[in-house]
Every structure is written in C-alpha cells, then in structure tokens.
Length: 320
Image 1 (cartoon, rainbow, N blue to C red):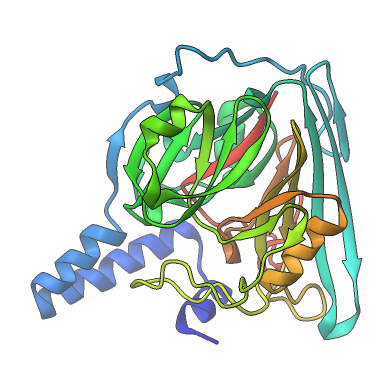
Image 2: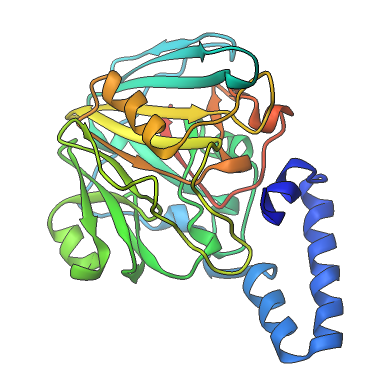
C-alpha cells in the first residue's frame, strides 16, 4: 500500500487536513527553500482562474430544465426530460465482496447532463464535497468528475464553455447530439472540439470500453504519476461514466478499501461492469476516496467504508 493510500484511509476532516498539509509544507519551505515553496503553491494554495464559472455560458446552447421530484430516499426519478434509476449491486463475500452503484440515466437533451465546479470557481486546488457542489446547482443526480483542479493540463470544456486548452492525455468528449467519443487531446484543440459540437470534456482516463468491448492494456495505464498521487491500478474505489446509446448514460461508483464491505475493482473489472450493462463506450474518472454518487441531496455510496465524502474540484450532474 502506498503512502497516499494509507493517508486516504486515515484521513482527518477535510479542513484539518488542508491546514495540516499547509503547515507541513510551510515547514518544508523554511527548511528547503524554493522546492517547498513550489509544492505549497502547486498543491495547497487556491488558484482561481475563473470566478462565477457558471456565468460563462455557451451562446448557442439552450439548457433544458427537469422537473424536481423525490425526497432523497427514492432510487428512481422521472420527469418530462430525464429518467433515472439507481441499482445497488453486491457480489462475492468476505474479503472478496464488491459493492457498487449503477445509475441508469436517460435524458431527452444531452445538455441536461451538466458540470459544476467547487465554489463555482475554475482553477487549481479549489475543492468542496460533491454533495455541496450538487446542492448549489440543484442536481438530481451527481457523481465526482475528473478532479481537473489537481493538475494544470488537459482540455477542459464544460457546459459548452472552454476553460483550459492544454492537451496531455486521452480524453472523453460528450457532444450536444447525445453521443460521446474517446479522443487524443494532443491531436486537437478546444476550439476544434467546440466546432464539432462538444458539450463536455473529461480529462482523466483511461478509456475503458470502445465499441462495446473492454479495451486492452487498461490494467497497466498510469494517470498523473506526479508528486502527491498514487497508482490508479489494482483494486480501488472507482467512478466511471459510460454511454449505451445517444442520451442513454451509465454512472458507476464502486466502493473499496473496506474489508468485508467492498474491496474495490481493477480497471478491467470496472470496464466489464459497463459492458455487462450494454455500454458501447466508457471512461474512468477520479477514484479512491473521491468516488461519490449523490442522489436528491443524499450520499448513495459509502466512500472508504466511512460514509464521508472527500473534497473534489468538480461534478457531473443531471439537472433538476
């Protein structure tokens, strides 16, 4: 188990953790000079690039509104514009048990699936619990996104608006016609994607499923091996998003690192969950303690077996 995995399992409350990290790196600044100052600036201090990010709108896109319903305890939702059903799945037993949650989502308009940033600000190191972000935008259903704020690379288009254009990895693009595709960020630009009708991009990965089949080699792919991160491989809590057909989506959150409740899954196992439910395409998002599903304001899953959310920079959600 890596040091970051151990830290996640024993993590104190978010505010205390950030203060502790700031203090620790502050000491490093005094002891080590420039290197510590870089780490403090890069991974702790907020860097707001766009305030009131939701005010940035795509002028050529109209967002449909869904009717509100439910009390926070239901496992389904239906309106004129969206239909959601959530299934809890438990497989295996003992230390081999896996617990995961599948939200089957059908919308009448692709722009009903939206994205929101922590504190409604775009930048680095800006975080809030997924439920808090979801409450702020009136989301019916939400999952954690790609934690774009941990890095300063990638193409970030959300709700039809470009926020970052620094291609670095394999991304996922959702289009306004309800389709989605995997793509190489380094071979295109945000402007070209917007011209193609892209509504959202996600920049984490890897892609899990293409043409209804599990992609080869995904159990050896590493994402963000820089300072402060750990391997995405092995059996982990995970979040993924997939598409069955136009405007028919699957959100999957797998709990993990909790003996006797859920061991987590490998990348290939996550991909197979999508394939078994008819997904033609699927993509891995940020996982670990960040994996969260929110429905009608309540936390659906049980992150790390503790029932506590971890702050993240963004969510994907179904508008309500």
